Length: 138
Image 1 (tube, rainbow, N blue to C red):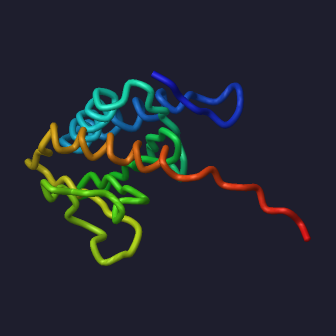
Image 2: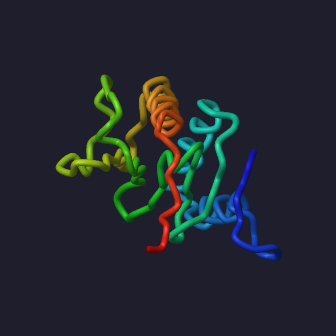
């Protein structure tokens, strides 16, 4: 499992995600742990990061973030509007032109194979994008 941390001496992203799952100690922690496992099944090379105080999974760019709310675990795909979603997993943030999200409320489950396919599609999209060029100062 690859992780990204901002500076030496800080907890690794994986440790921060483990701690977040552990502190939830309810269905939200179990749901976050399950989708984390599915992401790793879909992409063993995924990089775990901790940004904006939430788990972030990346490969060639951000795949998705894992926010936790009182009534749902939300997986936000920053390029979700560009992904095919034949199984209809996206059920939130549908009005935007770029992002899409999956809200998982208590008692709900995710179609595991469709979710892994969505992760793989997000990776393919990230890897197909031309690299960003550094801005020059004029």
